[in-house]
Image (cartoon, rainbow, N blue to C red; front, side):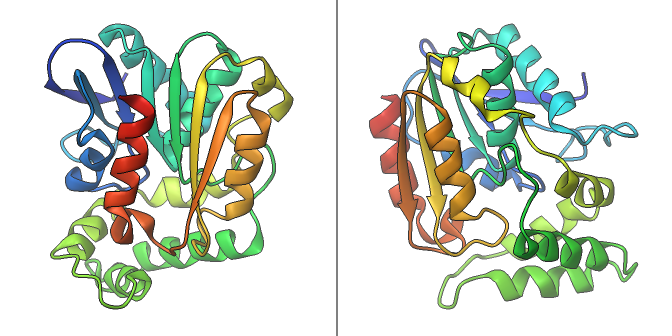
Length: 246
């Protein structure tokens, strides 16, 4: 297992937090803010201080296996996942319907169908920029263009560009993957589920969030009016998670 994790807080309940692909350290901690008990924040392979991912790692089954191993190690019965993290948790739920009591799935990118044209183009732009070999200049340009106007993000673009430069394989391989082969398996999941989507995020289309919520038998769907809700709607996300998990 190439995943690392850090625990914040103490006591019960234990909540696992699984970030998205290329998440900066600050991004990874956002969903843990304000939650009671112990928050266990994962660092996936190729991120932060974790080792680079082994060859052919970037598929939802492999990521889900690592996430499940950490959940078992720390005794987490609740989990929050963002994007790739949401997909990994969805895969675990399909394979182990009783594993979690509560799941918060933020910005799911896909479910059991291939990504649409807009999502594929967004991945391709990032993959091409990473492959440019210019020290991250092209990646920073792509990321900066995606930041909504009027939002102060500090050094976010630089930090995320640094992260993505290690993830060329993931950017090529993940667009071809789906979290679950058959979404009907999710109907058996006993967890209470919160799904949060966004209206204008090409990498995380609202259709994927809607399909994910519909597939679970006990899910609630919230849609935020944003192209980048992790930047523009942090307070709303925190409120939704605190209300759902606390």
